[in-house]
Length: 439
Image (cartoon, rainbow, N blue to C red; front, side, top):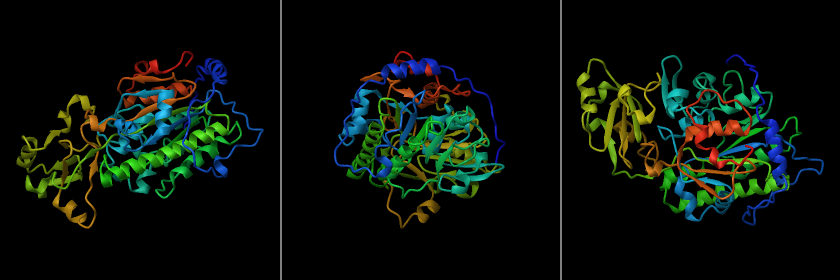
């Protein structure tokens, strides 16, 4: 565990925010939600003594894992579409490279490219710490993997305020000695409605305990797309399920008098593209596997080659069908990737829809269904584009903004909660057009 820090933070623009919130408090809620979802106690109206008086307004960051930017236009998400129509929607948001879950979730709350925040892959190796896998709960809770950056909830805590997270990658670890006041260990069995109710319950806390920054995570769309493909009925059903949970959140906020006072930012970490068993690149068929140490496979494969076998490295780095390989120092600059010590010496990136694998991996998965959707490809591909929707007193109404990189989200979030941002790779000035005057 790291040492607890306690740095002073400037409250910045609280007075200006208080004026803006007061001016907007009388706005009527314009977003309608689908009928039919009963609300349990956690989502029911709070006691009459409850007063929605938080200044600056609470900020809720929602991630829908794997939600492609164009999925919102498929007619399965009326609540999300209504929030976008009444607030701000980006044409798309460009994920950071690699377009994977853990690297991009940490980018969203740090503003740093994965190469700079240290979570360079869902699976990675460190010379001191050993191996990290996103499914390894001990590794996910080990702060040493995460300490190369400062997520927003740590800054909020250090400013003497409160934060709460539902399943956000990194939130299970005491990063630099700091955890959110409220956090949950990942539990895939926790339903979308239960996750929403946890957030609403935290908003019911007394004013001096109520979180200023909250996160909420949904993984259902990503799972459905991996299993059945991004254009499948299963993916549509998963999107509809999450949308009903968002409707529950909206209704819960309305019943608390918070809907027109909370800033709600809804994002995804990456998109998804279709793949199939006939689009596999089997490394054993191209090089001698005895010379390789493979760290990851998939759309992106990372590995090292035995120093005594330079011909194997040369073979990989030569022209390849359906993939391109680089030494880490030669990765194209637009990826902002390859300098971190956790990035292996050689990276191989598959063409869209293709997957890099090994015979050993195929043998281990022989009894499992084929994966029909993947991400992790070139982050500039349209299929990898992510979602961005925002709604609340800080945001303009009915605005569509151009595509922007997800490193810009963190400085925007920091501004919304009046926190001085840490060093980051984002450019908040590029996204200020989505904000109302006073914010």
